[in-house]
Length: 226
Ligand SMILES: *Cc1c(COP(=O)(O)O)cnc(C)c1O
Image (cartoon, rainbow, N blue to C red; front, side):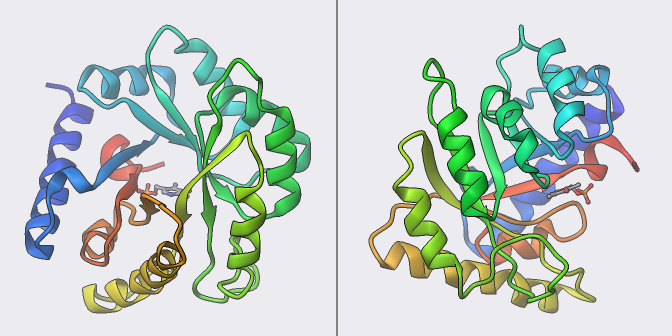
């Protein structure tokens, strides 16, 4: 068994344990393998071990991998910042965008999504910490962006993504993730049918699952240190 296959097993074990501790079914939490900076060979190893969805941050790097692996049935998620001049590449190559935080980018992705492809599945990235420098829409601006994105026919809004500040312990990490969970629940209480709350990484996925994550994004615990 390869190291990557062993690491994937260990992560599924962690997700399972976190779900049991939270009284949730392990099937409620998807694992996104974050392959940024790693090569086609590593993605192939993870794919051989049964992993079929991968997250990438750097558009140009991702497009090269997506092209090299086009014979594989892989779901590709864009989880990094998107500049206006990169939206066409994203619209043409990815299945999901989780890092949507501006209407202008949403409009460009909608206009540029090829008709032959399914609508682009999107999560809005929300910044629950208020850190001004960080990506993500503020909780105050979230409802307006949600309403605008829902009007775009070539985008399918699936939920929220968040990257909280690193926390010192499990309770603190759970509290940070709970803020995103509240925003997610509030949107669904308004009648939306969002099914994806993307939060939790290698260091904090257990707390994220405790707080209600439905998708954890794990890089270094699968592929090694970057
Ligand atoms: C890199 C990255 C991850 C994975 O982080 P690890 O700590 O390596 O698990 C998850 N989400 C986003 C948005 C990232 O940029």
